[in-house]
Image (cartoon, rainbow over all chains, first blue to last red):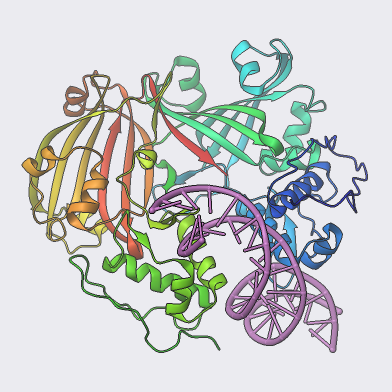
Length: 262
Length: 262
DNA sequence: TAGTGGTCTAGACCACGTG
DNA sequence: ACGTGGTCTAGACCACTAT
């Protein structure tokens, strides 16, 4: 009958970010799962921020009053899920989208030849409106809740290649404006993380081949009817809460979507 | 200075299948990696066949003269890579494509509504020929080496949905004929595994949107020019050796290609 | 009841990165 | 030299499955 001992060093010192919900958490499960949940809470509450180093394994073992091996197994799983990054000799760090190394975890478009060049993002519009039924459903909002709609085009080597319609919960992205977005360099998810305390953990995509309609064709510089890759993505943050719906159209002439099965 | 002790129970008793290559294997690396390599060898040589149970952790620990924890870590990684399947209370088993549970690991097409229905495979042709340059390159064969080409259509609910051109090394798939193929029920990879001792471990896909040409359109019952999902797959077996090239065209009306990012 | 994998511990030592 | 994560061990006990 294992359960975590009372409440200890779980110092959720209300730092800037998230609500530190403190969901009941699984009580009767393997110890390392409980530790995993506690660490996840600290990540979500912002006690340890993206890019920062978390306490060492021995420290955590002391804090939670378990053996180092148990903490290790918890961290192993979190690292496998890309929430943490281990670096031998240095420590364990909170994963972040602000790293060149891991830039393209969520954009799996590669050129037929050569390396992927840095791309240019051209903002078309940023609008606040009431969520259409389908978007509300996917974001788990009430119909007509406020949302932000961002439209943009990504250009690779000066060729428009990706058109994105990005839907975000309005409540969560209050200060998001076209100006603020255009100032920001680098991936969107990096900005969401640093400016809106919203870290994208995983995403699920539905991919289809579609014919370009007139509007999309014009924006991407292709002919109406040309085949495009349609990518419908829902992104999730801690606790599997959906926080972004993204509809993308990819021009796959000279580029392909890379996927590995195992 | 760790290395595996001399040669022990590594009884590669030349059973029916593979050549049991016995590549030198990594000598100075973590012990559990060496164990992992040894286990992989036994899998490749056919000592333990798909679906069978491998020796228990304590047995393996004794055989390799290491602790159970070390064997455990090796098995953990092999299970994570889908080479083995752990089943509590029963044992650890060699993964197989002959299981309903894991049928659609490599076919990620889902219907917009409802569950995926069992599909019908319609063989168009099976032909032996000399490998075109591009196929030879991808299969790491010499140009003009013999290959087998299989063409088929998959039908979902009586609607042709997937057209596949499958290229296989001729030497490896000697007895493969249209008759033999059409007798076989179930996934191709299950047949390859049981009949040709070739287990597909992982695959890499390049996905594009293309316009259907006349020939493909006719076979799939769509109009020429209609958008199709083009899926170029290379599948690998033990040791990352490529053993299949597959060019697929998917009709994504009513179906989508599902992908999860993390 | 016996055998399997699953969890947890405690401690020793190694490999890497830093000061 | 020190602190970090990484490896390896040995042993205890739990949970599940079969007989």
